[in-house]
Figure 1 (cartoon, helix red, strand yellow):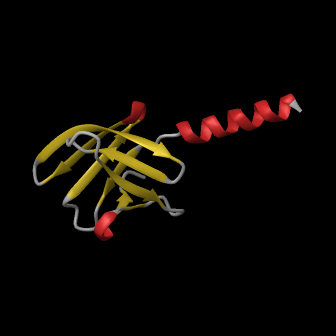
Figure 2 (figure 1 turned 90 degrees about the horizontal axis):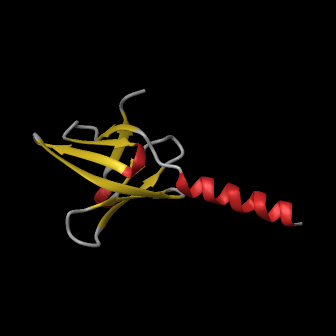
Length: 95
């Protein structure tokens, strides 16, 4: 029984720790999110880039905003795209 609990705990931890990697952009190419290992993401929009952090929790990707304690929450869809607030949809562009 202890073996099963250990295996279940390891599976849960590995699922929670998964990040995402790659470049995502909106359909117009105005905004680009470049996700890297270690929970880093660079957001580029209209010639301005800013590096911040992100955390993946299941199908939710929380991108930290400069305002203390705030985040922009995206849902990781089955097709690999990200859906965010106000209808934002980011498609992976570096496949």
